[in-house]
Image 1 (cartoon, rainbow, N blue to C red):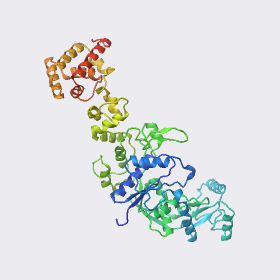
Image 2: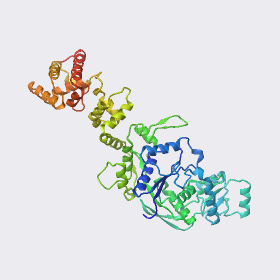
Image 3: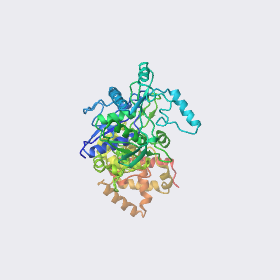
Image 4: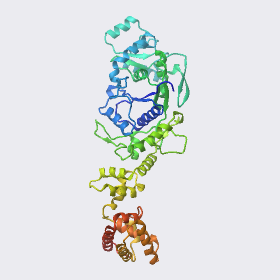
Length: 510
């Protein structure tokens, strides 16, 4: 590619960044890095009525947490700023005037009430009202196409509210190209004359994003499928200005786990999974929406599963580092069809990343959430023994606290099935054998244990669960011989004594 690659992620600060927006940002980031380009963040805040305090910071923090920071944007000027549309307000008027001068746009003075009446009149006839070629000059609508220049000037001078509408061409077939969807043909007679500018001096999204993309030299616009219906207008605007349009790619929707429609916050609330990257506290309600970060997910896991929502590498590989995703990413491998969100798959990715994380790193993270302080080296061993059974770091402690704390209860199912006949006598004998062991390695304990049960003519399934029950309180877990070695002789012997006393008192043997 000869043209410098510049892509942008352009969210509106109207609330928390949805996970679908994070996916869009990720694909832009991957594309930029794959081609040695620039990833731009632009805040599209033209709709000031919907602006929410804290939303912009949330967007930035979310991108940083995902390890996909922007190269240019608010606070990182690359020579194309400002990067907030509200701060670019002064730029848009000249481009609106240019369109009007070239007969590509016009003033419209229709009131909201008048337009509503037109809609109702059309509905009464079983039709849909569209402000375009078939009615713009027929006398019912008030615009500069039917008014004289003097009348238009007078209305503006009198402070009448107006909008500037794009003059959509008539009887043309517009051929559009999308990098994902191929060639799209549009009959321009079906297009309405979209509002580009309002008398309060603020542009609409359509004008602002086209002007900004041009001025910021954006080479590729990679955005969600919901913007596909706007592609025709945006291409026409580029044509009207005489500018070369960027290349467009519209990403597939992220669909609900079940049923129809795109993923929403309600789906997350209903099925118990986050739909936001970070916790979000609504300023109005003070309600907290859970984020992936606070729910215990690794950012690498979130990025990995998001990459596979609508894209695949064309291979069987599923686990990718960020650098590997950059290397493998190609818009040609993005699907047209919607990608169904699978919360279980998300957890699978989390499990894989947790298992591949170094034990010491997990231990340091685990120590941050524990009330009591523990030696990092011992916590590392806890992590090594338990991480195959965990999805989140918290699970390591939930399932493995017995490695550092004596059990206070004993698994009811195991007790009911195994604690009978001569179980207490058998365990007392095994306790004595363990007390005399000099080599307390896992291998030595295992060898001695097998010799013990062989001499008793018992199977491992009759004795090992009892050993585990008394020492850990659990019915299952990692290797008992590794656990025993980790705890040490004195601790194991003491735990067996406590367990024998407790179960003998509370659970009579049959």
